[in-house]
Each structure stands twice: as C-alpha cells, then as structure tokens.
Amino acid sequence: MRRSRTEKDESRRQILAAAARLFRERGVDGVTVAEVMQAAKLTHGGFYRHFADKDDLVARAVASALEDGREGNAGSAGQNLAAFAASYLTEKHRDNAGSGCVFASLGPELARGSAPARHVTTEAIQRTIEAFAPTAPGRNDAERREAAIGTWAAMVGALVLSRLSDDRAFAQEVLDATHAWLTRQGLREGDGDVGVEPNPSGGG
Image: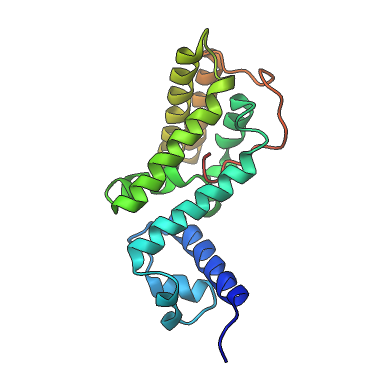
C-alpha cells in the first residue's frame, strides 16, 4: 500500500528533526545516515526517498533548524537584542547543544561543507544581523549594523569557547564576562519591546 503524502511529509520532518539534533550534538562527521534514521524511528532504506545523499540532508537539516530558530525568535530577536543575548549566554544553552545555536555547534564544519549548506548558513547569518540591528546601540543605521555584527560574533564565539573548556567555572566566566562586556558597549534590555521569551536555538 502506497504511503500518503501526509505520511511522507511526517517522515521527512522526523528525519530532519533527528538530523538537526544529532548534528549539533556530535557534529556532521560524527553522525551516520543510519544513526539519523534510527533516531527518527525509520528504516535506513527509506532515506533515499527523501534526500539525494548525506550532503543534501545536512543542508536541509541546517535550514530546518534555522527556520525553527527564526520562528521562536520572531517576536523578540528583532525587537530586543539585549534580551536575546541574556538568554543566549547561559549555562542552559551551553549544555544543550542539540537544541541550541546552529552556528556555534556546526560553524567550522559548515565552513568546510557543501556549497548548499554554506549558502543556507550565509543567508541565515545575514537575516540574523538584519533582525538584530534595529535595537543594537548606535547613532545611525550603519553603527547599529556594526554593533549587531560585533555583538552576534561575540555571542557565538563566547558559546564556542565556553563549550571547549573542561573547567566549568571558567566556562561560566566566559559567558558572564561576554555579557558584561556587551552591556558596557551599550547593550541594554528595555531598548525595545520584548514580545516573547527569546529562544537561542537556530539563530535568526
């Protein structure tokens, strides 16, 4: 009996969700297609009904994770960068890579990855900057865009360094120091209205 379109779409969604989580937890090279399918509770043989190869899966899983992140941030990231930073630079976010920021978890691998994955990531970075810029500190649009880029780069870098450390006290210091430094640069909560609680996953 042929599967319905709805069933096929649901299977694809399960594969993308499993892949996005596993890739962020263990890296692209640390996860096989078979492991993704097992996590999605589907048979390995069904993979090629949805994706051409693993590179195709990576690009689409990254896009899916970033889309989920944008939806979670739609009411807040574009309105208050400071509130987003406060949520992003936390122990909870650091310790939950599987549901966290794609850029911090997979950035170096994606930089060496396929052209489609890099394109998806580049577009997401640009959208994130555009969403953050309106409430970044600055006297004009150019300064606010510069501050948004610098703030976002500092946040992602801080999360990467914090995860790298095997000293938990130092790992927390990295997050706290980065947040304190950004605050001194003029990043203040309350500069814009916060619609919903910021969700650091995805990134835009």
